[in-house]
Image (cartoon, rainbow, N blue to C red; front, top):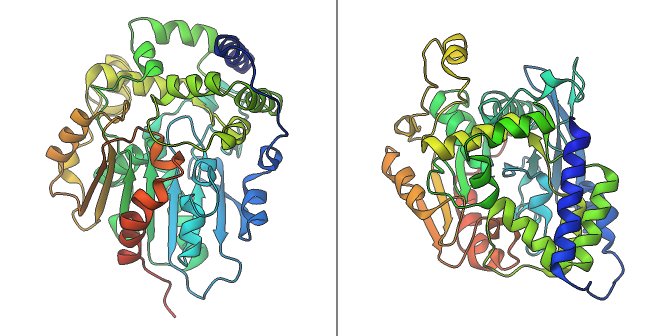
Length: 404
């Protein structure tokens, strides 16, 4: 079946949600950002932006985005922002310039880089494989931690001359940084601070509908028959416009789709931006990556992908997948954890376990009881409630500019 089956499945879901949502809202003109690229959205708001392709050691070509204020100061400190599960770098430009973290960091004098994982909208190329090849899709967040993040960091440092990056991750963007740091794949000297928005290491207590279904016995086997071992929730230009229409005309159906993927949101969303979200999301990933997430739900562990006993012996020389030991988190990397009391993916019980396993308390533990998982990046009040009072000061405290 392959990618076409995945797109057809998503289309059916969108139509069903639209029907369940009832009568359409009064049709309004599309927000211009629906048809803009990430850089066009930044440029029309007065920022410089350019796509930069970075090739990982294993050949994946990842499109990152490099942003600055219009007239940047010399020798800027560098911030690297990484998206969450089934997402892409658009998430940090979801709201307007006085609300979205990428714009705010530019205003604070940072050079901002937006990262993307292999397999999402901006990671579909490889030096010698096609995204139509099954082999292209044989990865999970293990590979994000082993290749994508460290290789992007190295490329950024080489291009900017900065000694290290300030890293901000959301959701999956945090689990891959935790995994990379404790395994030694990401060098602590190259990360001056780690800001974790809706941090994830354990998901044994999560209640997100999508992962709960995928974790049921036999579901991943059926999914692999339908989709193959390829892409999960791939999107095309045509499907993006359908999603934009659904989110404009059936906002309840659009919110239902988001909540199925990442849990209910609790904080204030800018409803007029939902159509823009529909045109740029979901980012997509691999079936194997979703299987890895499902394994973590069932095992309640923070561990590598499970290939089965024989496969584990071949890959790891042991019958079970290795554990990522949070006790090995490098204490020289300052850590800020930003959590929500209504996070269905980063459940408070799993956050307590994460905190207990770390070798030191985080420098910042900032909880907003009313926030859910995506509120950390999509709530238009996050700037006043979290970014200005805590995130931006923490990043400024440890930022390192290139030497003169």
